[in-house]
Length: 497
Image: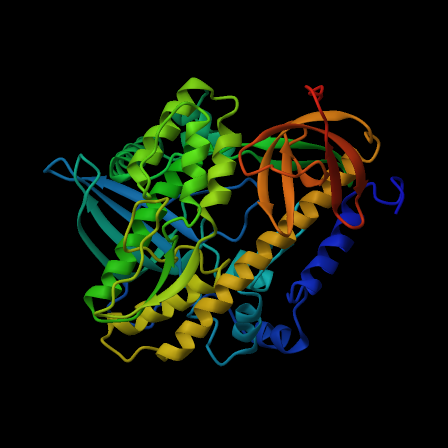
C-alpha cells in the first residue's frame, strides 16, 4: 500500500477492523443486540428501598477529554478524627444488561472495549455506555458505591458497599485538572463554576497521595511509560507524540486501586468467590537483576518488590529522561497480569507491581466484562444470595477475559504500528537510538525514542536482551501490515526526531 493510499484515519480504521476480526473480536453490534437496545426505555431506576439517595453529594468525574463512557465518580468528606471518607460511585451496568441478553453475550465475547489510535470499538453499544449506563453530568444514575474511610497515613480503616442514586455535578478532563493540582495553572472553568469543588478535589488528591505513599512503602513499583498518542489534522495523521501519566490520572488511579481492594475484601468477607486481577512473581527476575547490575546496582537473587522499587526510584532521580525506557523494560520482564478466581479458603496470588494482595477489577463495567462479572457477584453478596456463576463458569470467564485483554493490547499495538509505519515510510535508511523491549524465539523488538514507536530487529539481533540499548537503522515500514523493521548497526547511530 502506498504512502498516499494510507494517509489518514479512514485507512487506519480499515486496518483496525481487520485486526479486530483476526483476533476474534466483533467490531459491530448484531441486529439482536440493537433490537434489545431499542426496547430499553431509559436509565435504570432504584428498585429497592435500601438504595440510598446521594444525589446531593458533590460528585465529579475526571476522564479523558473525549470520554463519554463514564464509569466512576468520586467525592470525599473530612472526618472529625482526622480521617477522610471517600466515596467512589461505579455505574450500575448490570441493571440494564441481563445475563441472558444478546447484549451480554456480545460483551462477553469481546470482553473489553478496544481503544485504537483510529477508532474505539466499545464493548457495549454507545447508547448504553455513553448514555444510559454512563454517569453523565447532570443526570440521575444508579450506581454501586464503595465507601472507605482512610487515616492520615493512607490506611483504609473502615469500608462498606451499597447501591445509591447519584448525580455527576462536573465532568472534568485530566489535562485541565492536572496542571491546576500541581500548582502550574488556574482552576479549570468547570471547577471554578461549582462551589466547593476545588476544595473537594484537593482533598481527594491528598488522600490519593497518601494511598500511593502507603503502597510504595509496601513495595509498589514506580513505573512510567511513554504512550504514543496519535495527532490528526482533520483525518490526516500528522504525528505520534509521547504521553505520560499526569497528576489527575494518578489521583483517579489511586482511588480506583483502593476501591478495587475494598471490593475484593468485601466479597471475601461474605464467603463469595472473587474475580481477582493478579500479577504473579516475575519468572524473569534473573534478567531484572542483570538489568540493575548494568547500572551498578545489586538486587537480591529472589524476587523482592521493595528492593526493585528502591532501584527504580534511584534511577528515576538519576536519569528522568531515560526512565520510561527502563520502566518499559521492567514491565516487559514482569509479564502481563491475568484474571483468576479466588474462593474462600484458598489463597490467591497478589499483584506484584501494585503491592496489593486482595485486588479485583470492578470500577469500569462499561469498558471491561470482568468488572461486570464482579458487579453481579457483589449484587448477590449484598443480599446473601447464591453466586450468579458457578466455579467452573467463573474460571472459564477468567481465562477468556485474560485472553481477550491480551488480544485487545495486540490489536491496539498493531494499529499503533500501522500509524507509526505510516509516519516512517519516508525515513527508510535513517538511524535511531533504541532500547530492546522484547527478546524471544518469536523475535527481538526495539523501541526508538522519537517518534516513540516499536519495531522488529530483523538483522543483528543475536545476543540482544530486554533493556539493552542499541543503534538501529530503519530498513522497512508497511502501514498496511503494521510492520516496522530495523537492523542493528555498529558504532553509534544518529538519534533523529
